Length: 486
Image 1 (cartoon, one colour):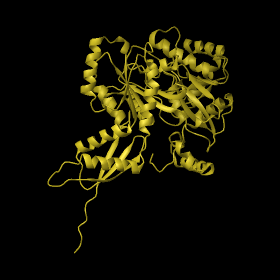
Image 2 (cartoon, rainbow, N blue to C red):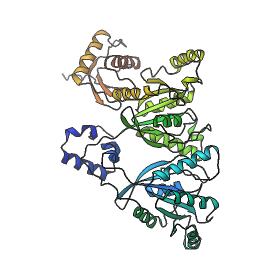
Image 3 (cartoon, rainbow, N blue to C red):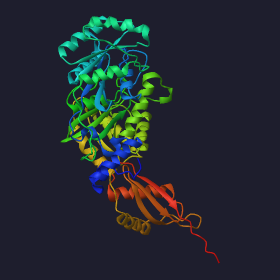
Image 4 (tube, rainbow, N blue to C red):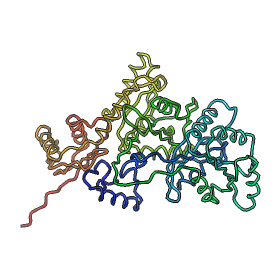
């Protein structure tokens, strides 16, 4: 968003009435209120009620979630097992706000990654205020569906039974057969086409407790947003589980376990953070297909929404071209940057020596990035992660007063003037910081400043003012001398 829009941390410049009016206008204009004023749900007005969407694999849970939230957010593909983690989205229906949790398909007597997926679905049931149980009306009630019913009865939560894939009146009879599950009236819907979803949502909201009122003009801000990104299988989900202190997301040796970005509120270092576990970014995104392709797009979107990107690199392997591409993506998105070298506990002295040489050679463009050496498996050095994130965010938000900046630029011009080119020596006339997040500077000069001299100015800016952990953008405007009329 542009710099004219007052964000939550600038609320002090506005009175409560003006701020409330601005936020209402922002909502009408379609601005992202989380960007404009912080996370409203975290503004101290009580938690939103939670609706979990449960069912066996490939019955249309993610399609229904997308229908409820009104956008294509959850990854959908016509094969079972695409969703693996429990992923939470905010939704509203008829003026009532609530959270909807998409889950992986629940199956009984499964092993490996499927068992982890089922466990996450069970966690979602425990944490929910009400459950939407989705059954494929075309297939009818299966043994797995019967097992889900037993699970729901033990949980004791209100349940709304949904008969999905009822595309027309001919499918109503199939839906009626689901009375046999003993969960009350089945609601026939088509999540794909939207048929019957309004009545189903009315029933779901009847089962939920009242949502807190949405208010404006309150003290806003919300938790800082941290995106965990990296190649597949470098330990992003393990790191999230370690900082959370529990199994929040599915971890498996199989690469590409995570598909949807998973938002988790985590207490760490005395603060609440919003960590986002993302899908591993593979090589050649445009050559991917299906769930992996859409997962990559959502990872890129999660980085854009984040404030700081924590890039995980497998320290036991050589730094790859793909690692460098992922770092470049975070830098080009203008995010604060922390490089976390994972699996540090597995390194011997020889590997550490070669890793340092690789960092000097391959990551020479980002010496300013914050660095932590961690082990997501053992938790080693995990206490260093929050200070690194906080330092990067502080640099990302640093603003230099115009007077101090120009005094600094004057010293540079006097001690290290621009080289003479073509008989001319361009000079910096004036400079200003055009914005923060990340810091952006505009220099007005009498002529073109070469790229090497701009890098020199950036290096000196960092030496003088810090800017640890953040990219710095410098643009130059050339002011040509006007010829005098005789």
